[in-house]
Image (tube, rainbow, N blue to C red; front, top):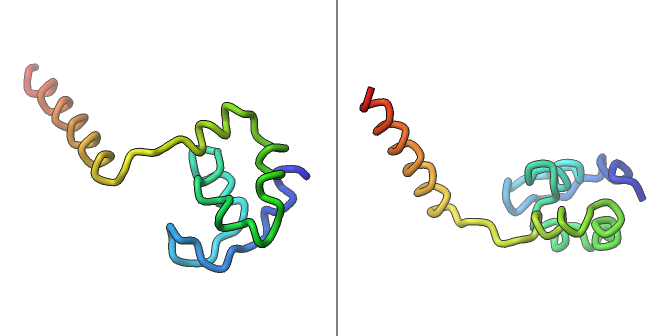
Length: 92
């Protein structure tokens, strides 16, 4: 089963976006890697675990399914980066 075999299949409601999405979106949304929710969303439509094992390396799967920072943590990270950029531009 190739990566593109299920690209046109649609999931009725993405829990992240709130509407229907094609499988291709789910398998590429995480910087080219699958969404961490892909196993729970797609398990009734296809053998998603076998698909993942067949199409992604162990390192890719670890990267895709490792814990991601929460929303607030991402916001704080962005604010810290912006604060650092502002300090650097003020030094000139």
